[in-house]
Image (cartoon, rainbow, N blue to C red; front, side):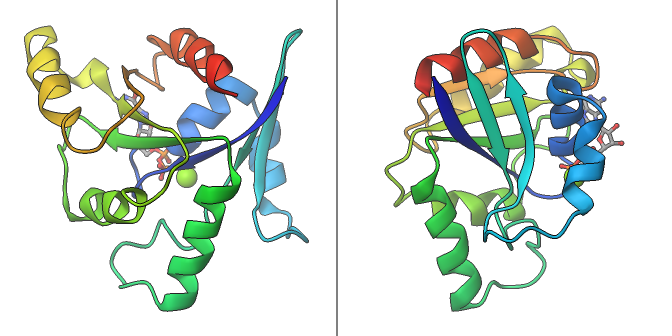
Amino acid sequence: KSGFISIVGRPNVGKSTFLNRVIGQKIAIMSDKPQTTRNKVQGVLTTNESQMIFIDTPGIHKPKHKLGDFMIKAATNTFREVDLILFMVNVDEGLGRGDEYIMELLKDVKTPVFLVLNKIDTLHPDELLPMIEDYRTRLPFKEVVPISALEGNNVETLLEQVHSYI
Ligand code: GDP
Ligand code: MG
């Protein structure tokens, strides 16, 4: 089993921290290499049962600038070409304009989307459930998965859920 997974989210939500945790140090080196294909491979996680290929989405991490048509097309093409999209947000800051903008792009895409709520280590446990209930109504997310990429909480569970969608 093998699948392509796109991790999207505005800057600083923890995408690199997550990739580093699941794949290790090699990514930093990989992501500096210019890639010949349109979609930059950020890392590959190979287990006994599967291969998860994480790829970057061009242009999507620059919410301060309105994306031009070309950027929107590139991002949308990436979303269509992958098997699964992990949309990562930062629970410490809540949903902001950068997140809203990405959700606008995601709403017309048929590829399954997981909402990954990162940085749960910054929350009081009582705050998490209402947040999940609120966020899960925003788009038809296949899964809503709270994690701490930094501390590793629930990351294994997320990978198992990813595995079942690829
Ligand atoms: P990216 O821009 O989405 O790739 O975000 P980074 O992975 O570079 O992370 C941005 C900042 O958030 C860094 O200072 C990370 O250490 C921090 N960070 C990432 N994940 C977590 C988390 O689960 N909990 C906390 N408290 N901080 C995190
Ligand atoms: Mg990063």
